[in-house]
Length: 599
Image 1: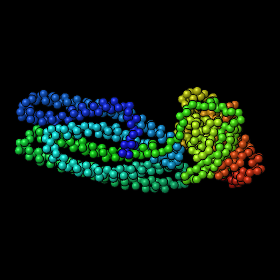
Image 2: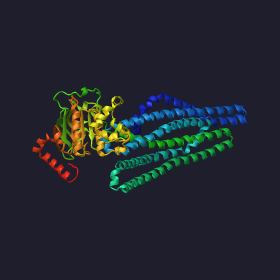
Image 3: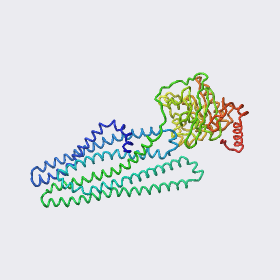
Image 4: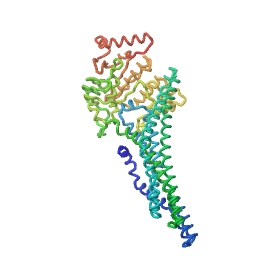
């Protein structure tokens, strides 16, 4: 029942092709009947042509050859049509699964390993694709074959047919016995594959750390242990599958021998003709073949069932980002009421099950045409705070308003287009510089963007000169995670990418940590100029541990223990705030020691 429920999400993908699938089933019936006519023709050939001379030999042979060629042609055409349809279904299914995974909340990607996600997207879907593209048609064909042969065996000698079924309980019993064992082992093998892929992705994603720590051998040993567990369970699964398939074959062999004994006796007693026995034995041989195939498909389906359940778990047992039906872009052109906050927090709190309360009754206002700094000790909750601004993480209580609207009522696409966050660890796709710069822009926006506008954004962040010095310039490939660029260059490129989106609120979360103090100050001045060019009201929020540029800020928010404890300008906070004085002192000590402040 659970598997049937898991399969419900596949039905919409099959529905558009239901008429073609019905035609495929009809063609399968025709090709099956034609393909199984030979034993009956052999009976006619022996009893009615060679012995009784009732029909002409040439006529019967010509009929048999014609039926054979027609059956082969129908089967070939039917297989091609079926493969094409199933590939289209699987393509739609794979893309839909990818989209559904992307719509999961951010915490989903924190909890689950990338290797497990990619294994389900590739390995498990490949298992389903393999079964659907050839297993499902085999199931239909074998079921039709079994039904037709059963009818012919009953027609030829129903008593002998009952004798042939004496060993069938052994076959069915073995299926029922091995089924749960195969499911259990298959699930464990899938999990081990996910662990191995996760380990390799994690290792190569952090290869610099691994090399600097000289931990290559340690990582290899971990992989060795994981593969050893995988091999052990794979061998165990192989043994179980061999027994599950071998016992039915033995039962079929015993049944065939028993039929030869009883049928041969009937021929000797002249209660059965030689042609009938030959046709019966031929049909019986084909009778067991679809049973074996169906048994193999049944066991194979158990493996597919594990894959279906694993995918179903990610689709329906994970939380999706909340969306709103209101796609209307209200408050267009970034208009704000004069004097009203650009972003407003009112008694916002957030509780998590493991970390307790990470935000506590936060109240803050970010005004348009201002550059605001958010500073505080590490672990105070600053990153969590900005994640709530774009609904990357949900709040427990309170309200957040952006341009006067509750952010829960703003479509995510618009919200994340108008509030752009640039983080310290810059994510870069393994593509060209221009591809990374234009990430997230629509095709129309890319066409409308001029080279002058592109270069202006890059010039404002100080990355244009670097790009123009490269041989391929904007077509330069940055490599995996942008490894061909320095940390500061990646940060400048990421800020330029943010400016190209023309956000209402630009947030820099330690996004200038790779720059020296002079470069950072120049960048802040350029951003202040960028903000001032928009008369409709933009804002900049900077999260930083570096206080050397705080004099440029219109307002500074002091954040501690998940809440705003004070706010003001640099001079006033330096005079009255003990926390601000301690932060300045800590940064000074780190600079004196040649380090980087981490408070």
